[in-house]
Image 1 (cartoon, one colour):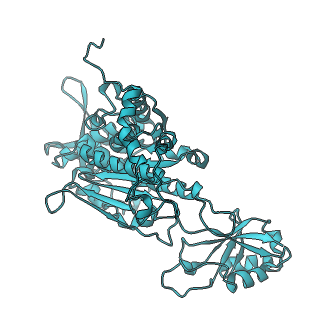
Image 2 (cartoon, helix red, strand yellow; image 1 turned 120 degrees about the vertical axis):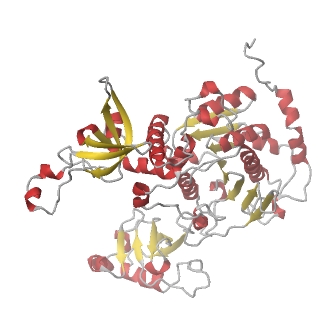
Image 3 (cartoon, one colour; image 1 turned 45 degrees about the horizontal axis):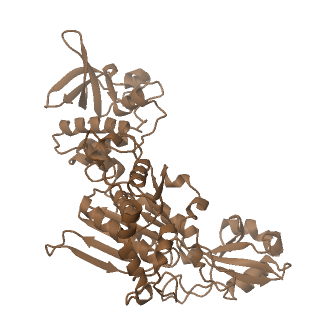
Length: 556
């Protein structure tokens, strides 16, 4: 018995089979909307073929869910209840009490535990036959071999940097056919379904690495980062976020601490002062330096001769409520950097996912807000300002998660038209209702992540000189397909090529200081620099910094 009330209803095998009966029926019927009828096909020429056994494909597919937060919880639930049984989830965050209002896989007793393991445990216990495996850590902790085991990846991330890294990883896994056709080996393409929410708006996106536009292709769609001038943060904070960013910035400010160990306090700097009460008890309060009362005129050569005179000794400090403390000794003050060192040590860096660190920042940011009469700074707002994360609404998470899982289902079964390539959900449109639109994002030919670098094989004599190779196969022969470098351009051949071996070592440069140094290589044989079957890379400043072409060298 459960003294706190009835526990969750556990679904047995028969109930699950009944739940999935509608999905089996769907996969058993012909459809007028198979993947081949849409504008985007996972594998060109493939068509949907109804077969109830497609359900087993769903159940055995290995799916990676990246993120177990607000969106990740919804994705995991939808995956499990759609029939996916081999689910993996990764997250580096731990559960905070503020998560509980929308991240429904967690309970109060889970606060402090890592999100991935708690979410996995909840689903494993609730839904028989589903196996969710959790990973607590960063994406960057895992290599390409680990990622290549998955059939599909669904991302429910809350920051841009992690999305870019994941996108780059999946693009790097794509290989090409060995028949010199230049066609992508679709068995190496791992679809990435990227979901994201911001308030009442959300997006779901289908990315087929090296086939559709990738995340990096559309980075110019994101608004520029909202930066603040340092002078604004230090002297005239206007918003609650200004206070949080100020404290975060000052944690690494070592410039005020001199080699002697003494500290120079600047005007408007936030400090903590120690006060002795009438009863002999000491207390601390935060304030702003408004004046250095005995600052030395540094233009006075006699004063400059004695370094000790350069350090102001007493200060006037404005505390909360506008009261001014005068004659405050510098030895009774500490700035944010000094406070951080005293609390955590000089070598400790801020861990944005550690509540102890973020609470420390929030306490001082709240004090700064009070000093400048700024209202509305909450812990969540401090967290959002420092981590630059996006706020979430539970209903938006539910809509976007269902869209992401549906696209994953269609990628595996071909049973419906794929989203090509971007779905935008607006839960509060200008017309006063809900809108949901799709649009196609085109690939960027200069995208650093998914640039077309398919290897074209060139057969040459092993005795061919480097100069002859460059003249005949790079400058004139047209071995490099430059049709996608600049749309509408008449660019056919490179102008100032630079050639690298597979290890990234440059052995030919056309112009510049390095050209003279590499000139001796021109009379050397290609086989001295490139092995049979090795892939070389060609770049050219006239193509743009992110464009490159690859050639596989095969010796006759």
